[in-house]
Image (tube, rainbow, N blue to C red):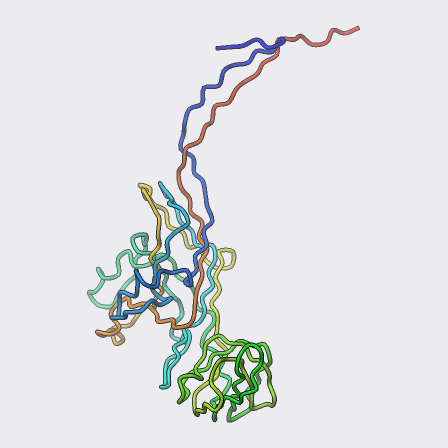
Length: 303
């Protein structure tokens, strides 16, 4: 049907719905995980951890055709303990495997005949260029000194050798005989000397301990402009995506597999957290037909 509007022919639009590919950028954070409903399912753990968690998405994405990892920030694992413990990413961890339950489309090999246990086992492979945390020094002792600042009681830590730390630096302390002095990702308040430093916390005055280690935790960074692209395409599309089950793990050698550390067991991060940014491509309805206009007026006649 056409309309004549002052010398202009206007055609009525006849829009036809078509599927278009659209993208949304999504950021998730392990601190936003559901700590009560979903907990670690591997290794027999009963509490939530940033190495294996579930987050609910802000909206339901339908007809998803591709998911790309854009960037990641992963704090080094920290386990606060009074005993000797493995800290951070290890030199043997040349890479970390990111898994998204039900969305993995990548395989990995395994020694011997154990190949089927590594099918669709990971989503992204993140290179570890952090190594081990920078160890500051072994602690000789620590005690709550009282006279706390406004943010809490000041605790003084003494090291056996010069620590090289500075005020405002973020550190982790573990392995002390008093668990109250084991802290993660705290800032140094003051550095009275080359072998002492203080932090602001809520430890009661007079609490003392000995031993332990202070270290500067490492952080693993990833972005798709610097490292390999981590992309998975889905055909047919995923009908509905409303939550993500995230797992971070190492590729365990056979000697490391046990009842408490089964194949594919997540990394225990403790107080450390992580965040990921994804680009989600999905199909949605769009319209390609628009109204058209055509003039019937002749060109201006020449003089």
